[in-house]
Length: 308
Image 1 (cartoon, rainbow, N blue to C red):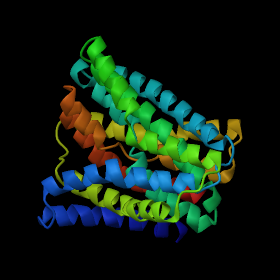
Image 2: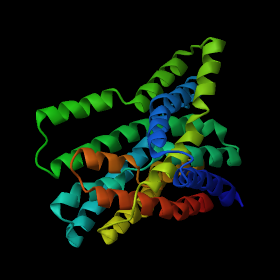
Image 3: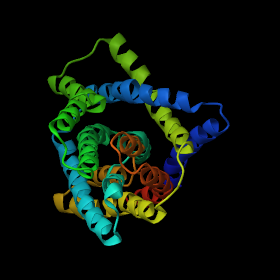
């Protein structure tokens, strides 16, 4: 029941977004606008509000991030070997590796972890999850861009400048850093401002889940299904398996281990499909990986919760 009460609500809201989009109660264009609203307004307000008003817990967030980052790099190495053994063609190579390492940390990871920590009475670990997520999001994004660019030749100075600008203006990273700065300085926001940010941030998680469902409706499993399935398994299965011994070796607490493994078990981010389209990657492979990994993540997240 512990697992069901956490995983089921999250995926039911995702399913609701898919149904509402399928019956055209929500249009695909509106889903796109809601996604922008969530990413640039809702989630930054949520992260800043949550982090700025919480105790940061020392450097534990960076330790959790170290486990997740290490597992992600190991998963990238495994994905590279698998891609070579399976003969993934050059035009699909970058998209395969990207799909195998870039998780939907904010849109799926945060709702699941929030419910899990609340159910365990471990709300004090919530700021650790928020602070650990931000740098991993940036690194996964940077790796994704580089993998797709390298797949089509060496990235030039223009592409690298674009990548640097994207990282410097990432709203999730900026809001997390700003919130941590306020908390570390012991500053207290005016009541009206803190409340406004909290109310704005409350829309982030439910809208994020609805947007995932609406986005999945526009995607189809097509072409190179075996490669997409392998990428999905690498993302939701192999990554958390690699993270578990790292967490034990570094000495994460049970709550910190749960946070790291849940983030690692999240499905492939829909952004991998968007990025593949922008940078000339394999859109069919990326889309199929997103759909398949989302379905498989029901199992992977449930297993992590059951064993955690």
